[in-house]
Image (cartoon, rainbow, N blue to C red; front, side, top):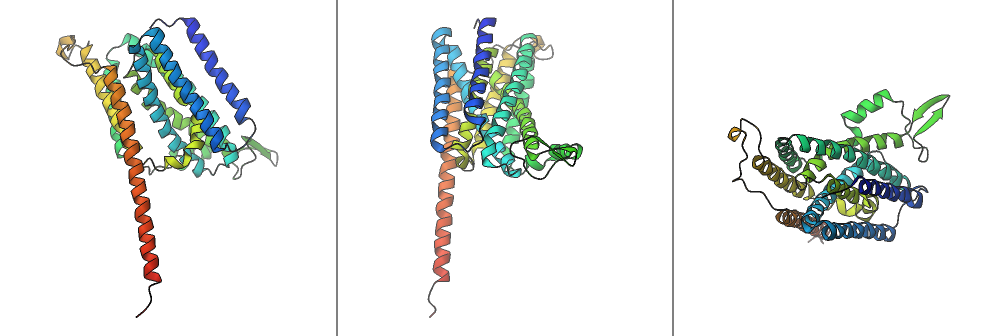
Length: 340
């Protein structure tokens, strides 16, 4: 793709500038964003991401453009799954709504830093060890299985990791505005706000394990991996407030993401076989008869999976709502039925 160090520096500088702007323009003063504000900025960041993808296609070729769009769509879907876990954490810690923006902002910055580190490590591994595609493929297939059959029973706010954190840190029971620590009787305590940030940071680390191998299954270009992740995370804060109620209605999102992860896992294994160098597989020779899944098919498959999962989720929740309304109505008729 021919990305120069100068382009990398400019890209990272602009990304940092966007997050600095976000903090001073929206997050610094605690408030709960309105639906209109969230919708405007969500549309802006999504439009910016799409425009960037068109720019890649025009200046670097539509093969790279297709890889970017497939990666962005995958990372956006995984980021929405992040939002669902963030919602559980916010509820578990009873974070006041006016302070949720700050927590999300810090969590998103942590996510970008962690993914940046994973991207650098992944690029180095791919450059030097082609067999790493077998590892990435197997990991994604395992994660797909776990995603498909998880039932959302775990509570990140009260899991083992957070229990351990509470043991080693003196914690107050109440929030003190948006402060992370507070002094009481001459002793320094951490507030629940700091625990929320630690919990979200830990979850970001877990999700980075999913997202980075997934996008490396769609492109080998570290620049595309980074920009797709950056744009997927930009606007995530606004999206949280815009679709907070809708998140609970996406009941098949986990299964849809499982299908996407499994598909990319298979794609990675096929690619690993196609460039094989392991001596105990085909004598260390590539298996050229193994098909390479083209990026246009990957883009269509991922888009269709997201659309189908969303449609089926909304249809199921709508039918469940109607069923509850009928049961409530029938129950009221029984209660108020006149006696003979």
